[in-house]
Image (cartoon, rainbow, N blue to C red; front, side):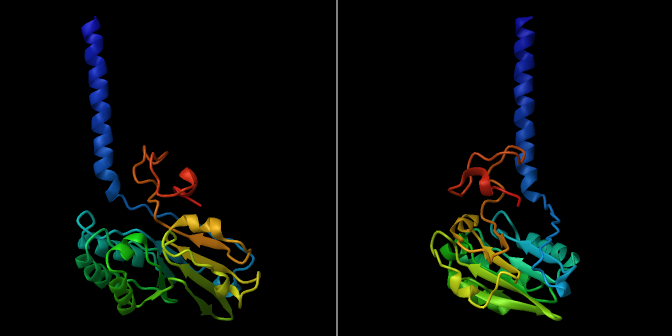
Length: 237
């Protein structure tokens, strides 16, 4: 009886290991689209119903092929976005991946424009070439910059900051022409920058970087997150 119990335990452990292994191999290929309705009194009436698509941490490289970038662009365009924001870390490693990645991202379509910031991987692997490639692709770079987006009689402002750990940049200069009645979006690759905001003019911050946890136990908890605030900025709103 003891031997049978040991066999059952070993089989259970083996099954659990196989399940975890399968999850680890399959999960990186899932593309989950999350829909969020933003309700804010500061949003101009002319922007009611407009759609923003936010994409971050593509990490084109050995583990995320050019074909997958192409498929991602197709899926984004199928959502019929009015505005596209990209949040950095376009490549994983190796500057040879920069141009192929942005040749595919050139296909992104949004009637009111495409805007983005750089992530830490972009700075590590020739940030100047990434900036140049973004410009050629028609993506407006907002690393430590801001721009009004106008539609009809209304406008919203989008600001961006460079990767937090390298460029702790104050955003007050972006907001001099903004009142608390304006709708303002901040792009920051690293969500930790949100803790640095000391005013009430920013309505929403869009970030990436934490990947929902570098390694997660079925998306519920992550033993390591590249954030000094633990699980707070792992995922979600």
